[in-house]
Length: 305
Ligand SMILES: [Zn+2]
Image (cartoon, rainbow, N blue to C red):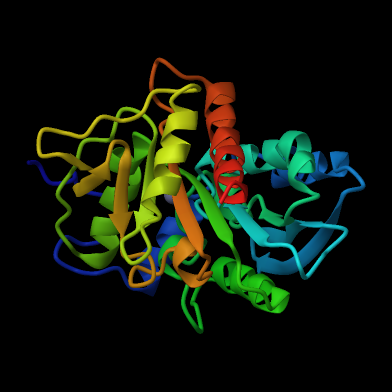
C-alpha cells in the first residue's frame, strides 16, 4: 500500500482554509463548454419530453442554468424514474450517456414510466473537468438537508417538487486514473488526511446501496453492460476501490450516510455506475454506450417485475 502523493496547494499537516481553497479555485480553467456540449444537444429533444430549468448557479466564473428533461405527459399512475449525470462534472460519459439516453432510447419507455433526467448536475465541474464545485466541495458527498453544495441542493429541490416515491434512481459516474493522480491527493490535502491509494479498477462496475442493495437489478445491469464493455475484476483482496464486492462487478456503499446522490432520493431501486474511460479497450463512444445500456437494462428489469 502506498499513500497518495503530495499536493501542491496547502501546508502538510494542516487542513485547507479559505485561502487555500481560493488558491485552488484560481488555478482551475475552463476546458470545454457546457453550452456547446450539453445545453445545445438538448435542443434535439423530441416532443415526448419537455425541458425544465430547475435552478441556476451564479459563480464568478459564469452563470450556469441547470436543466432537467421530463416526460411531457406526466401520469401520476405511472412509476417515476430519475436519471442523473455529471454530479461529478469531470466524469464525461455520465453527462454524455444521460444525454444519449434522452435523445435515442428514452422514447421507448415513455408509455410506461415518467422520466426525469438531469444530465449535468455540476456544469462548472464539467467545464473545468473537476470533481469539486468552485468552493472545493464534492457535490457527491453533499446530498443532505441544508447542503453546502448548490448543485446538490438544486437537484434535491427538483426531486422534492415531484412529490412522488421514485421507483428508480440511476446515477451515472466514472472512475478515472485522475482519481489517483489528482482528486484523491487534493482531498487528502484539503482535509489533512492520509489516503491509502487503491488500484483504479480496470473496467465497469456498479455501486449499490448497502441499506438497499437491489442485488438482482445489479446482476441484470452487469449482464447487459458486459455485452458493451468489460467488467472490472475484483483485486487480490476481493475488493474494488477498497470495498468488498457483493457480486461480480458490484460493491455497496452506505449512500445516505456518505451523502451520495442515490442516497437522498429514496428510490425503490437504485444504482450508481462507474465507467472506466482510461482503458485502452474503450473509447468515448463505448463509454457512452455503456451508460445507456445501464439505464435501458435497469428500466427493462424494473418494468418486468
Ligand atoms: Zn463520480
